[in-house]
Length: 282
Length: 127
Image (cartoon, rainbow over all chains, first blue to last red; front, top):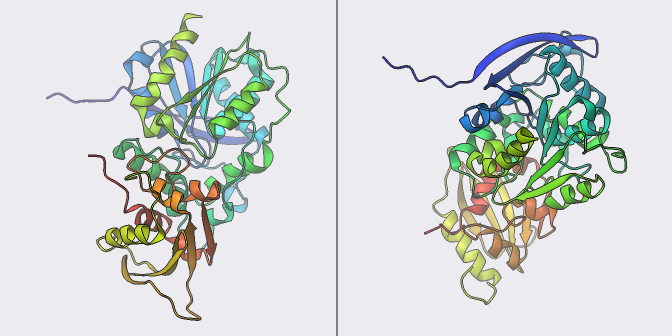
C-alpha cells in the first residue's frame, strides 16, 4: 500500500497577543530560511497550500502559514462572545511579531497578501531589523473603498455567500476554475463578521500614506507584487506606494488578481521564484 | 467583440436575452431587475433561480427592486471571452463608473453571485 501524503504538517501553539492567550493553528513544510505567510482578510492559511507543496520553494525555505486568531482553525481568544472583532494596525503587528517569537524564528522572511501586504509595509517601517526580507502581495499604503462593508455582517444576508460573491471579481478571469472556487470557499467559511472586522484595519485604521518614512530596504529588501486584475489594490496603488519607499521593487503580475498564491499558483510562482531566489542568494 | 462598430443597446439586449433564456441555478431567487443596455432599458423578472419574463417596453408606474445600467462599451467589454482588467466584473465596472447600480440593493446582495453570473452569461467562450 502506498499512502500519498502531502509534506504539509499542521500544529497548534499558544502564546499571548495583547495580554490575551491565543491558541494558534499553523501549517508548515520544508526547511531552510523561515518564510512566514500572512493570509488575506476573512480567509485562512489554506491560501498558501500550493507554496507549501512546491519543492522548489520548500527545498530552501521553511514555509509557515498560520491562521490569525478568529480565522480558520485558530479560535478567538477567551471571552470573544462579548466583543466585536476589529483588527487594528497595532494588534496585527503584535500578532505577527508574537507568532515569530513563539516559534523562535530568527530573521524570517514574511510574505503577506492584501491586509497581509499592508501590514508588511508597517513591519518594514517599524521592524526591518527583525526580518531578512519582506514581500507584499497586493500591497499598498491606502486604497479607495469600493463597497459598503455593512453588507458583510447582517441578519438578512448570508455572510459567507456575500463575502465570497463580493471578492469573486477580484479573481482574474484566467485563473483556473478549481483554484477560483477553492479561494471563494475560504470566504464562504469565515466566521460571522470576521471579514468585516479585518476590513476595519484595511479601511479605517491603516492609512499609511505619508507614514512609511525611514524604511531601510538596504537592510531588509522589500518586494511588492500586484496582480493586474486586482481592482481593490490596483497596480497604480502599489506603484504609488513604492514611489515613497526608496529601494523597494515592484512587479505587476499579468493574468492574476487579488489572491495570486491561491487563485493561480502556477502563474504566481513565475513571479515569486525570482524574488525567493534573490533573497536566498543574498 | 465582433467587428469595429459598437454594438447598439438593442443588439446587446438580444444577446442577453438569448443567454438568459437558458440560465438557471437551483436557488430561490425572486427579484425584479431593471437592466439598461446603453439607452435601452428592460425589466427582467427572476423567479426560482431563472429568468421568468423580460419586458422590453415597460408601462407607467412599473416598479423594480434594483437596476444595473451600463454603457454599450461596458457591456461589450464585460462579455469578451477574456475581459480586460477593470471591465471583468460587475463591481469593477461599478467602481470605474461604467455601470451604475441603484435601487433596493438587498435582493442583489442576498443573491450577488447569482446576479453576477446571470449578467455574465452572454460572455464569449474561448474557442
